[in-house]
Image 1 (cartoon, rainbow, N blue to C red):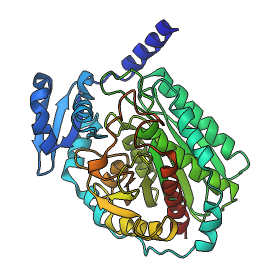
Image 2 (cartoon, helix red, strand yellow):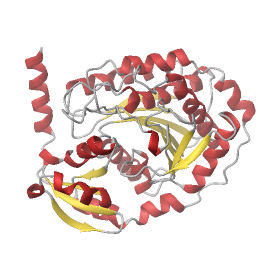
Image 3 (cartoon, rainbow, N blue to C red):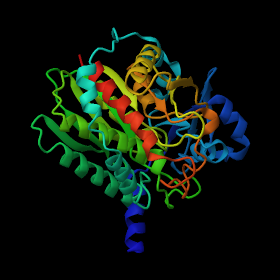
Length: 388
């Protein structure tokens, strides 16, 4: 069996072979840790106030992000590209600024009579079980066979949840590498999109193909998305606009899956009303608040989330923060000009030091699956209150 695993992994690497790989990474942290990189295989092509664009080889595609995992326990240190012009466009930042600063909607909180009955159907037991089962895979590294198996497991679960709905569709979104993203859709009367997502991969920074349960990072986010989908279906919620639930592949290696998926949405010309990212939702040792990250997010939509938290989670149960040196899949939406938000589990000084290791499990210190229920409440209220 081990020989078969290694053979499949080899074909996955070969199928993903790229001669040049480009990464847009945090400037301060690149130069802080540059001495620890193999600089002979890293060329700095350009830089601006915030970022550095580097060219490297396929064998070093994760070198910088792995180093960031080790040094600062951060997630998603940069954005990986296989097209130079695409990377340059990201550096120029025009669409990104639109995503951050644009005011797209007149946000309001007015659907309590619809939202509250849906929230009553949330099951903490089911939520925790989803994390437990997903984190039981040996790893979900995007080039590994178990990444494919875990994605197929998520697909089966989402299809089972939505089997009673004729307006529902669930499918795998395939990429150039082996791990697919997973998408569920509740079709609305319009084709305008409201998106909730988390990333389905996990990674052991010290050995890519090693044991990586990824309970917090990011089985918790996938469980959040799953629970939101479940209670909406159980409530027979009929959306006005189309709701997308996404499990992005290959987040840990440069937001690869979300970048690919967002490019697809952009090519379709779809109007996106809002995006929320659930990445790490169960670790907090200090304040039990939802931390709304300002990195690559839309300020007006973040204010909307504050109102949602006050109404449906608890008054003053939010804080704002900047997560230096890291990002998540919301950044791929923001880079294309779509309004995105990233509610996070804890303050920057209270990060889960066990992510990207064998110890990222449900029984790790500071982890409590019940903490994630507040993110489920936020996810439900975001979708329903925006869906008007």
